[in-house]
Image (cartoon, rainbow, N blue to C red):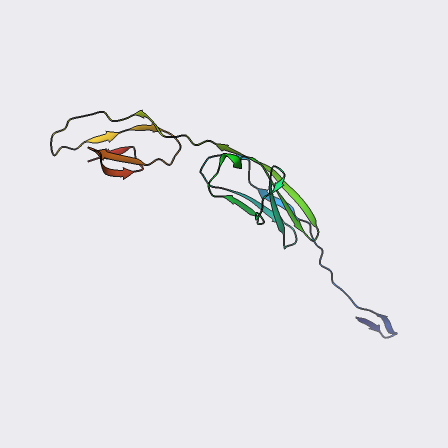
Length: 161
């Protein structure tokens, strides 16, 4: 770059423009949560700063292999997935650690009847409604049978024929 005036050449040099690198900061992160065994869960973090970012998710202080994006998904929770999760985010300007996110896994419970249909007699051609009350981890599937033969498979406690 040259700067000149009527007095002649004043300065000569090269101008360089540097872009400031901004270390990552966490904009938002998943909350601690309790989910039922078998359900899916996704832990997420949103970051501000200069891209690109690197991500490293950890469970109880141990790096999770392959967990290198802003989301960490578990498709079917096992009891062993319970723990304390953190994520280390980095770029050329620095690193920041997010968390901990405490994940509690509630054991799934097998279905059990609190009320089930009793034997009933109806006239041919009449409409009947059968009802059952069930406890257990959802989703539940109901298989309605007549004389040992399946007549309906539903997600409903009520079946009418």
